[in-house]
Image (cartoon, rainbow, N blue to C red; front, side):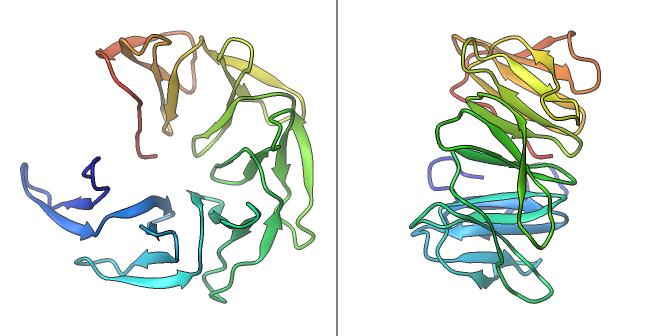
Length: 219
């Protein structure tokens, strides 16, 4: 993706060969094997048709997209409430109120309250109810198997142990994190280096890069 214009390019399978997939957009997200975007002016949500640079409108105005195995979710630009895309019915049912951030794993949607004092998990049922799984956090991050939270005191990364209020250390402090199925990528607090660790055996880290403003990766 072109980081300046947010134009998306697709790899054609040969080194150096890339083709345009999307015009500039506000955000992109993956859910399953589907690619989605928010229009540059946040006026609509689109789904990629699977070839070329053609897209289909599937929803109205949105601020942010959150995608993962548990589905595709979008927040409303007016009130911040979050909705889930029902592809079968081409409908967006409401699932929760506004939050400071959300994260989607392979099974669940997690939300951080607006004041960042609590982390909740959506039960996925028709009642759209949520239950508390953790306390204060600065941000949420997700891999296909786990949700992670940064602590507000020192910016350390914790991994949810799939039991309410149970979180295990996953990384020392970082300026930014991004997580895939197998790896955690951490930008050092002074942004001078990028490190790679394991989601399954936290504690061993390898420096893989130098100074950076942020880190990003695809699950």
